[in-house]
Amino acid sequence: MNAIQKIDTGVVNQDAPKIRVLIVDDSRLQRRILSASLSRMGYEVREAESGRAALDICDAWPPDMVLSDWIMPAMDGLEFCKIFKKLPRDGYGYFILLTSKSEKDDVAQGLEGGADDFLSKPVNGVELRARLAAGERIIQMQRELTSQTKVVSQTLQQLRAVHDSLNQDLIAAKKLQQSLVREKHKIFENAELSFTLLSAGHVGGDLVGYFPISDRQVGFFAIDVSGHGVSSALVTARLAGYLTSASPEQNIALYYDNAGNICARSPAQVVSDLNRIVLEEMETDHYFTVILALADMQTGLTTLCQAGHPHPLVRRRAGAIEQNGTGGLPVGLFEDVEFEEFQVQLEAGDQLLLTSDGITECPNVDDVLLGEKGFERLMRKLVGLGGPQLLEALVWLLSEYADDAGFPDDVSAVLYEFKPQSNA
Picture (cartoon, rainbow, N blue to C red):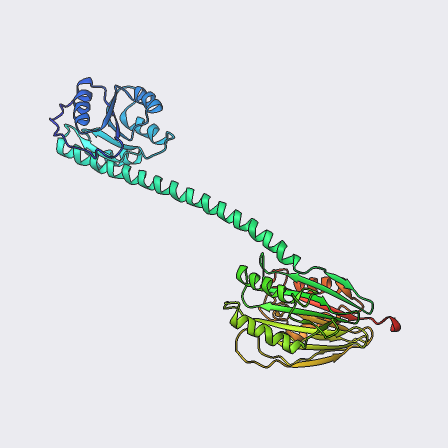
């Protein structure tokens, strides 16, 4: 064996965990010289006289760095390096081969075997310190990367927990929003009301509902708040508080007359009041479209106010389909807007359908919107159906049109059917 030159000492970072260095050499003298020098440099050092002994040490004391002689009996340094690199470990194991070989083929063989660096014998102290410093930088970077990975993993776990919590909250919010539609089917003496509400996400901005007025009158509505998600859903919940109660104290569409009877206000006045409330009291950037209807269940006369919502669809008993309305501006955009009313005379067996634009603006796979004409085509396929069955079939046909890709917008509808008993 070649003699080892005297090695200058250095100082490692005292704040960092000590780097473990395993010295493997069949020469006891050379191990001791290296061990003493590295200990003075601040490394934690252990020795092994052979590759087999070194593997036993690695099992109980995994080193960060290995200084191994190449030429050793039984198991040489290159064979030990190959096995060392395959050992399971938390961090990176940096391997330096000590050798008198200097041919390029020998260096290539060592690199292929997994060695990270080489030191020629006799070892120069300055060169050794430089090679150890290079290895230590790699180990420290690996430790920092592992630490950062743990932080990322912990953050992901925390985000996953937050996501799960939010998901549970949104599921609860969806149930709460669905509860705003108190009944999906309501039967009166001369009429029936049916409702459907499907949110594109957990919660949405659509709202449908009704409020009883008297034995002969009922009010119903369809609302579509701009945007999607929680903020839109909160606006719908606020609006539900203004329209769904049967008490004039809690419903701006109702009032008491001088005799104490509950009466309905003009739909246009109600929408105008909603416009004022949104602009002055609700402090929201959202606006909404609405169609509010007041139906006389004895005469079939229905008075409506349309504010930016899709036209109501009327299907006559004989099959004719009409889509007419005044259009109007959405609620919550401009002050002092005048909203118009119009009337629809329904006859026995006629159906009035109020829908959100989630139906007419539903795209197919080619991004072609269904449109009003497409909506009429769907309704013609549903001849003979009424009540909840009609709405369920309509949603099914709409899903088929979208190629079962899901609806990009909330889908909601109110179906009013005029069924006077005298004409049953």
